[in-house]
Amino acid sequence: MAQGQKQYLVKWEIDITADSPREAVKLALEIQQDKTSEALAFDVYEKATNSETAVNLLDEAFNSKKATRADKVLDLICFDDEKDADIEVCKLLLKLDNLEDKTQMLDHVLGDDEYPIEQFEFTFTVQDFLNHIE
Image 1: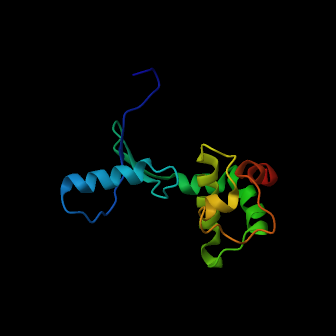
Image 2: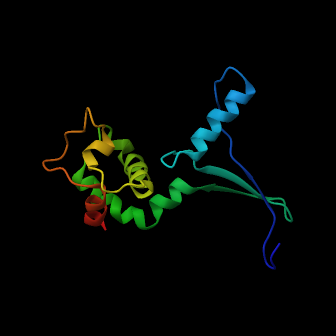
């Protein structure tokens, strides 16, 4: 361990319905590895002091640079449930930021190839959209 570093125990909990403990672990791992997952809340214990800190990366992403981008997204996209729009914007930005192929058309990423969303007057790539809201 490098000087100045501390030992932590990081816990992530999730309720899973499955046929077996092994299947439950596999489902939890899929959720954890999904780049668009909103399961980003952890309990962190510092071993030396036994102190606990709750860390929610989704909140941090929303309260950081992405918060300024969120207002621009809300100007461009309408969400069905306005009270949850902030959460939906944050999830959308995390999904788009983590998307490997940013040359895909945005309406297909948010919908799918067969049923793209029809909220945009013009279609554009994910990269164009991200550039526009910077």
